[in-house]
Image 1: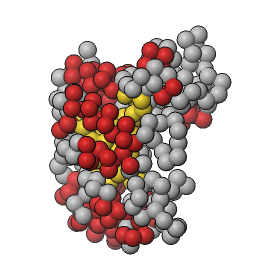
Image 2: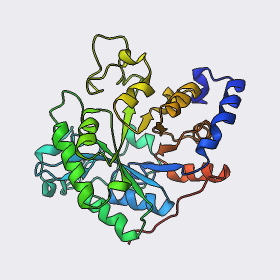
Image 3: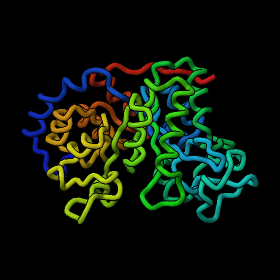
Length: 331
């Protein structure tokens, strides 16, 4: 198992499970990544409907912004040629323009309902069912779809997609204000969490609308947002330097005033989970697709999991006796 590569021995795992299992025994958060990316075209209304049909507690979705200032649900700052077809049905031959240079009407001309055959992405998600005609939805359309199902238990985890130094995404303050306004307009403040690797938008959101929960995303692999032992803070952490917090990610997340820590799941250890809990943080790692990893993390006391395969996670949760969120049919 991946997690055992970090040196977790059987005795340590057993002790950690005994101490932490009780924390995962209630209100476990089953989050469908980009809706249900392993099963339906990511970040589309079709993926949202699939996740609702399976039964999730939270829809994890990515946010961008169009030229006319509308929040849209899409992962990439520029149109991805592995996912995007022209109105003539042809896949883009190269990376497309930034979302922020196209109006919603222009974005809606592209079909994002099928992965390009033969691409590495297609090989990664061979069970994803194509839905020709799927379009990039607006956040308002997603909210409306969930409302039509009557699934008032379903929450939203919205990721502001921006990166330090990039000119392809809106400025953090513009992004944060737009998200706060959209969530308030939909009367969903209590059901929305906002996450980001670039913590600038989170800190601003905490001032603009402190009632919205915030999750600090972190990565310490080849994509390293922590950048320990370098001069000055990481550009991803909004001016906070992990070296000023003893190299502790949970302490840094707490200093950023996030209520949730969402690390890459392979970055977790029992000790880190325990430390995060000691700092009052919920721990919801990304992106966990193997059932054995799901089971291990649940036993170690995480508060939820983000997965491309919510159907797999439901089976693991059921086997462990965890309450399952109800399904809902999109009409």
